[in-house]
Image 1 (cartoon, rainbow, N blue to C red):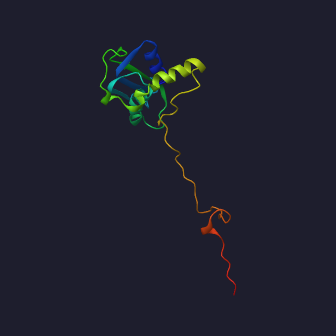
Image 2 (cartoon, helix red, strand yellow):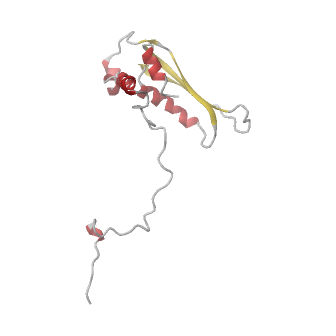
Image 3 (cartoon, rainbow, N blue to C red):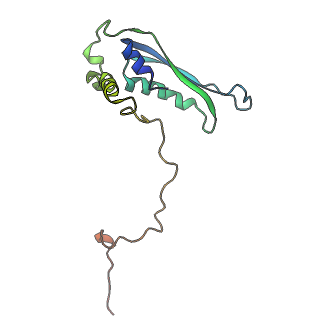
Length: 153
């Protein structure tokens, strides 16, 4: 869902000011009906995939774990042509100054859409488990503090 907004904005030479993200369960599942949505006003006009993904990520706080959503999407509004009004340098973030969005688009155009992207971009949490270390084997050969000491009587 996030992968299409930035390329479309770049294709049409547009930048967005407001991003709305939403999700919905099936209308036939009245037992678990849930329709979270969020509208985020960006700090400046942008078509950068990093900025749009960070804004859309705010929807994840409203999503209920275990709920089966049927559809999700984003809508960008407040559009204007690229470079319609220059921004002050103080308001440009470091990755925007490097034109990361246009670089990603060039790579995708040259090598295919699945070659590079933002990945999970922090949307996934880490594993819900931790390794148990109480039954771990000793590390005699790699750690001095675990080396066996032998005493003679």
